[in-house]
Image (spheres, rainbow over the protein chains, first blue to last red):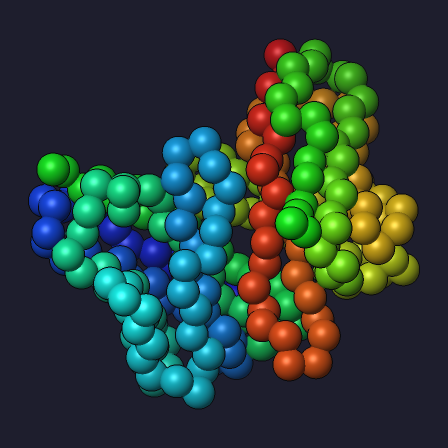
Length: 113
Length: 115
């Protein structure tokens, strides 16, 4: 099956700085890559996703890039704010098992005021 | 609003007890999932179901069983709970309809403690 690696496990930034979280995947047939945000005590919620036929996608302060050749994708958060503090999970939808997501282990992002 | 709900939200039980966690959804989705979350290990899939007659094992199904009673209900059972099953459990749903996104929607979670 698919294997998703996520780095770093923890990330601390000053408010206003940028944050980057990186993930790699193993299955070249994977075709969908979502990012979920989980605030403390809450459920994971989708914040942005990208499909394998797109190289980059932006939504206001967040963006995701995908490099299919290298099999890695990244989440970029610009102008970080304290409310961006949360655990972020990347995931990949395996090409061989329809609909199944494989999650990374998560990144705890802390934004200091 | 259409939602995914889980009961109970918190449960403390003893080793060896049988316990059931329930998930219901009003989103009209056909696919349902059970995940387990442990600190530093992310979200690991226990079981998933693509429709009422379909049940599939995930990566950590040992010690668990599931039942898909209806399209809107998916239950997770621990036949004989053990302490290392202490974790936060999430149910999720998705819609396989033509042209639909692959997004999974999560329930609020059940915090289970096995003493």
